[in-house]
Image (cartoon, rainbow, N blue to C red; front, side, top):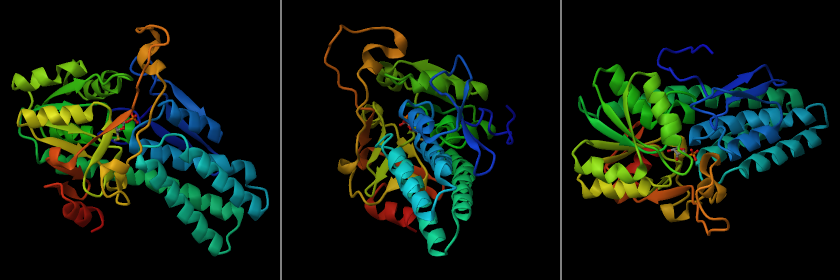
Length: 359
Ligand SMILES: CSC[C@H]1O[C@H](OP(=O)(O)O)[C@H](O)[C@@H]1O
């Protein structure tokens, strides 16, 4: 695996190989950090399952994978009539939309492709021309995210002082995006600027994206990473080790309320209690201005087995009742700033969100 960009030390989580008859190649993130395994996605069912089971995960990465999933999915109808090809397109889009409900990038990417399809159809294009346009759009979404991540890193690094202690939750790294990440983009940029940051990584139960993925990405780049249990966040804040908290997001409402991995809201409350700024790092594509507040953000409920048999070991009684929301929503008043590719939204108000996102 070679990386095209020296900044992308972690391998790209997503590759598309070939033309409209090609296929998607994903890192199976459920196997990290012990094994680096790639899966070939040659049909839309494989892409759907990869998103559902978090083999590919993270809001931008889900959007990119879904965009390529549409390109792969319509291959079965590319030689059919225009009507059948269109019907298959909408069938594939709806199927992928049902994989996970919270990360708005999934729907943002699918909507982008629906717009492309409609425009190409209106122009009287053939199945093959429409298919090629869908692939072009998927590739644009993929490549544009690389630039977006670096811009987020640049804006966020301006907030961080040398030798800062930063706490993060879950994984908002290169593995959650095209490469380079959102929250971790800030840390990677600080490192490249010689700021000597110390990162404290919440392991992030139940699926351990922090210990399995974030710690791995940071260590790949030679950045100081200290793994802690989620329950230790308050203690490291109390000990004065943390000067800023930065996490990613999966969907941000018009007032700045932000959905992110379960546990993020609690970290934001702890940060407030300790007078520590809590930042969200996210691209404009993660904002959902159709929602006035975070109350409308759909929260994914996942299989109880992720808690009772985490990573394959039973750690709870048979038939125990389980509640397993995959995300929670941090209210805007707990967020010091939202770091986007267009700059930092602060204070986080509906007016400032609108100005940056729609501006
Ligand atoms: C850059 S978005 C990362 C975001 O996505 C993660 O959720 P999941 O691992 O379930 O896809 C988590 O909320 C991260 O902050």
